[in-house]
Length: 96
Image 1: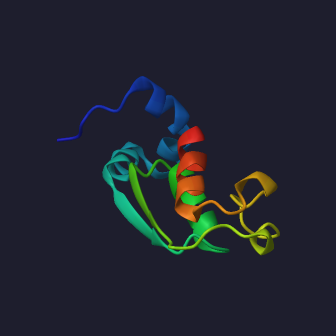
Image 2: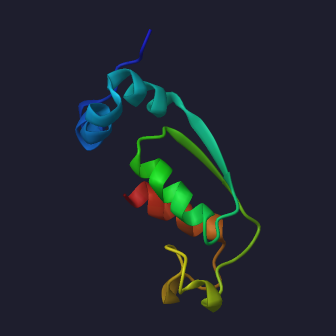
């Protein structure tokens, strides 16, 4: 039995539902994925998962953002240098 997704969720991820089907959309919403390493690849993976309607994402990285990350990592901007990567990425995912 599938739990009912909110109208806002259905509207936000309607394109995913059209592409993969409603069953997949519900499956994505119930899924939990762990991204280990929020660096050059992990940051893009986490962003894509969030924008694909994955319901629960765990981010693991023990590093802080440094200025050398700003050329390749979505969450690395001048104002986030020195902050923990997972905290900044969590805020980015929830903001979107």
